[in-house]
Image (cartoon, rainbow, N blue to C red; front, side, top):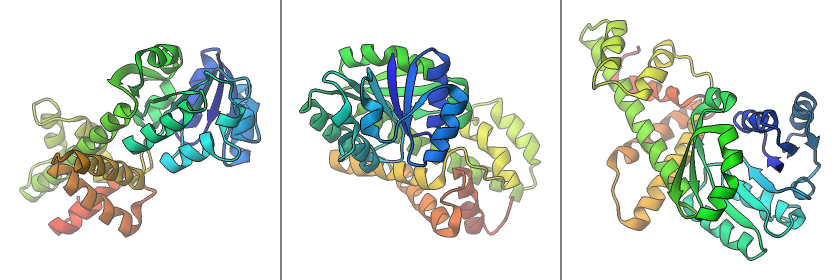
Length: 293
């Protein structure tokens, strides 16, 4: 397929590379032109000066940026892809946005004869690089089927969550749960240390039993080492948990661990860790516990 890929950040650059390796014909745009120029030189793609020009002649337009306002600008702004795209073009947003943002963007695109699905991802940069992301899709059945070949080039598990917006809803609930799990893992490490338990033994035993979790496996060593090399930014996780709580407030549902997660992430950001990996929230837990791993 001919694909316009908009956004070549930590995740997008790796996802686009997998599309190129799968044989799709890519035209790319990135806010930082130098980044896009280097990427196209490496992967044999075409560089477009605007989203509008990137979308000209494309079968699909993929956006991978920070939030809903950026997605809206790239698709529906004065130089947006919707102006250059032909009727029936499939717009696939793989950013993480508020579910309501996805629904509003979809409605505006439909008014211009374009299709839309939200397809946020989880798995961080290593899985983006090896094409094993989990992708959560909000779309009607026809649009989901039309996008499946592209999504399978970037992900191992493709989950059709329901209509537009439900991919985002699944993603932000999942990120809230992941953060709550990480907080519990961090507090458990601090408790184990305080009682004299060897932390290597703790991680090995928990990982082999019902106390294990993906967050304990992935983040226990970075938290212990205070190595916050960014795989997923603390500020981005705070954004996603906020989206989750805003949507749940509209539905009248409660999720107390997510409320706690938002508070801890906010404090980590205020302490200067917004661009660090969200394992940096251990610094807040350490401050509360009065001890350091």
